[in-house]
Length: 294
Image (tube, rainbow, N blue to C red; front, side):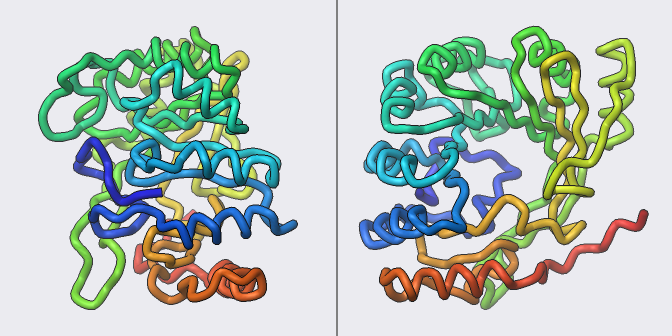
């Protein structure tokens, strides 16, 4: 929806894009709506930047949601008022994917500075649920929030909220001539530490199994009615296409972020859109990351 965000988290890869101020144009808005009507498109995810900054976000939700099985929106929640949550639900949204890394009301994510107005994850989740939307929480594991991991685990189980923990990626500026941020997995919190902490917090080690199309990059366990996921860098396992095919504010279409710049929307005719999306979707991972050995 936009490259802009109201936070500046140090680990943000911005969907592979260099930081900027662009918004999804009216032409690309129409392209997204047109593609949502195609039979091979099962879901639509609105992301950013912070998608709630886009002035037409409700219009896009309303336009694409009737065409797909489910639609969701990834947000840090700072702009997600109870009224907006209700509007998103009325427009047809299915789920909110809430990115929060800390219970600190003045600093819920590792962004520069502190919030002027307090943020409450409990109030935000309550507002989303009261609006009739599904909700899950995404947490990036870093030294910033390492001590809060047990609290997140207990909170998720008590409140019945599915939760995903993501390994940290080191993000750098694009290399000369490249249209993508440089990225490589560089966990600040080891997977071994996370699993020990989960076991100590819950009193037992739940069985983690590889998950659907993300395997083996992602594994999940059920704790009561809650799913806890551990998410590794997809490109390490060449699973970068699993989340779907991206359309960004510059009109680039790609699955693996390392392919950004190879395919671009030039026309919004249905045939042209289907062609560029098909071509981009069939490209393999070209990220230069070391493969993890079994």
